[in-house]
Length: 242
Ligand SMILES: [Zn+2]
Image (cartoon, rainbow, N blue to C red; front, side, top):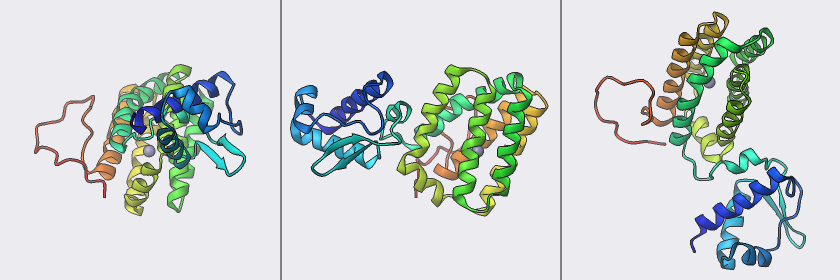
């Protein structure tokens, strides 16, 4: 059996355990030998799967003591496939976030709008990549919370957990510049203005425009799944992730 299915099953085992309360941060995992029995897979495949989960910082291994669930390993994080690509993340964002913005424009309470405004202001004042990125993530989540749909927020959090994948961080850092930060801040301002105006269509349109800019900057093209029809143009020449 190749590593990928074993890794997926190990991930499922952890997710089920974390959700069910039998696993959690700091809890010891079964030994390699027990995992061989449990997953009916060769020891070499178990080792590669454990190494992959360790790289993703979902588990920690202490020599002589065993393997433990890492502090940051929530059920949400575990549900994100490790090989999720930035293009896939952007496709899911494009599916979820314009609708979320639309709902938030209708459902947001004053306290939600205040928090969204606070995130916008802090993001605009951030002077470095890490600061802007943190307030950007918080702004998008604040908008998702303002939609007042717990199931949708759950889906958003699962999608958002993919932002912690190593590939995403390095890609964002490489594509980051003061000019882009300024452009993103303008995008964000348009979204927040539409929320304040209680204008669902404008909120969705501003979110679509923002996600297109992010996608273009990250991948140099639009994602395949777009909710709005593009005018015919030259065929995309594939992702250039560098
Ligand atoms: Zn943003």
